[in-house]
Image (cartoon, rainbow, N blue to C red; front, side, top):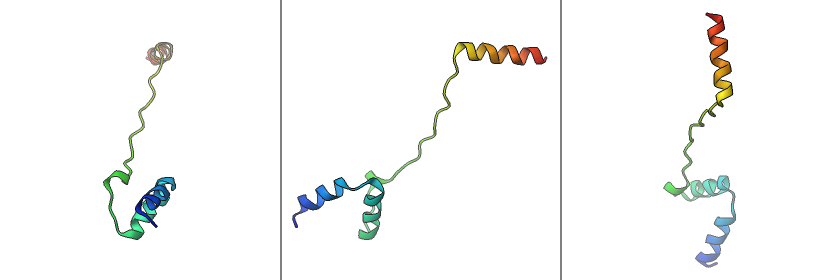
Length: 60
């Protein structure tokens, strides 16, 4: 088997299987480490902001 063939097979694998293969080979690759991004809270619209403020002011 040529290196190009192995490379093509690895490229066809899902991310989870690539990570598993690297663990089996004992290779640590920085390009395949996954980092979790913090999910941004969606911004509210002007109407939602106005409604929120009116509800808060009515409670006072």
